[in-house]
Length: 445
Ligand code: PLP
Image (cartoon, rainbow, N blue to C red; front, side):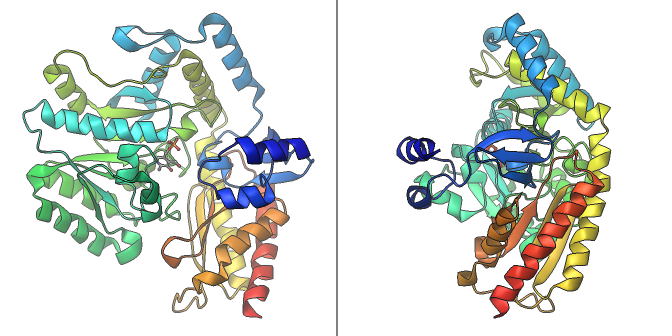
C-alpha cells in the first residue's frame, strides 16, 4: 500500500483532482473490487457507489457476463478499423440496436470513445450540415450556463461552468451561453435563449445544445414544458437541437433517454457512459433521418472525421451485452421506481433537518441542496463548505457521492446503479440522514 501510494503521488496525474491534495495525502481510495452497487478498497473498506462512479455504471459492478462478452469478442476479433467503409458485425448490430432504442426519428449512429468526443463530433456534424448546404457562416452554438459537455476543445467551449474554462487557454470561437432555468426559471431562460439568438443573428446559429438534466451543474431538472419551448424556438429559427444524453441516456432518468421525459425529439443526440456502463470507453452521436439525409445527399468526398476506436468491435460487443442486461432486468423501470423511493427518502430527511433546501429526482438522478434558511433559500457562506463536509461525512460512513459548489451552491448529487433495491436505498438514506444531521450540528454550533 505504501508503495502504491508513493507511486501514485510520483507518477499519476489524476483527472479533475487537486494535485496539492494528492501530494499531501496520496490517493483518497485505491479501489480493488466492484460488485453490484458496492466498491471495495485495497484495505478492505466497502463503499456504496452512490454515483455509479461517474454517473455511468448503470448495470452495477462486477458483471461476469460482460467480461465473457469482451473475452469472446477479443478472441474472435479484438479490433479492426471502421475507416474507409470497413466494418464489423458487433458495430453494425450496435448501431441498429441504438437506432431501435432511440426516439423514432433518430436512426444513424457515429461512434466515439467517450462523451467529450461525442459532443465534439456533434458540434462538427452540425457545422458540417450547414456548410455542405452552402451556409458556412451558420456555425455558432448556443448552450446553457451550468451545462457540462466534457473537456475536449468543443465540449469545453460548450460547457457553461467557468471553472472548466481556466485550463483551456483559448476556447473555440462561436459558443454563447444562455441562462439556465435553474438560475432564472423556465420563462426567463427561454427568453434568454431567444435574446442570445436574436443578438447573434439566427442565420449565424448552427445549433442549440443542452443536457435534458444538467448533471455536473448539480442535477438541475428543468420543468416539464421546458424542452417543448426550446424545440419550438429551434423550429422557428431553423436551428438544430443537440441533446447531450451522456448522463441521461440508457435509463438514468427512468426513461431510455432523458428527452422522453419532455416529449421532444432532438436532431442530434450524443451518448456515452451508460451505453457500456463503464465496462468499455465508448460513446457516439445519433442523428435524425433529416440530418442523415442531408449528409448522404450533400457530402462529397471523404467525411474527414473519425477516431481510431470508432466502431471498436470489443467495445460494441460489451455495449450490446450491457443493453441486453438493461432490457432483460427491466432496469429502466427500476430506475423510475427506485427514483421514487429515493425522493421519499430525501423528503423524510428534509422533514428532520433545518439545512435541506430543494430536493429533486428524475429516475435515479437526484440531488439535495443545503441552505442556511430553507424558507428563503439563503445560502451558506462558501467558506463553511457544507456540501464538501456532507461528502466527507458520507465517505467516513462508506458512501461515495459528489458535491457541486459552483456559484456558491451546496449541492450533493446522487446517481446510484440502476440495479439498486429498496433495501439498499433504505441503507443509503439511513447513512445520508446521519451524515446530514452531523454536519448540521457542526455548522449550527
Ligand atoms: N456530457 C455530459 C453531460 C457529461 O456529464 C460528461 C461527463 O461527465 C461528458 C459529456 C463528457 O464525457 P467524457 O468524460 O466521457 O468525455
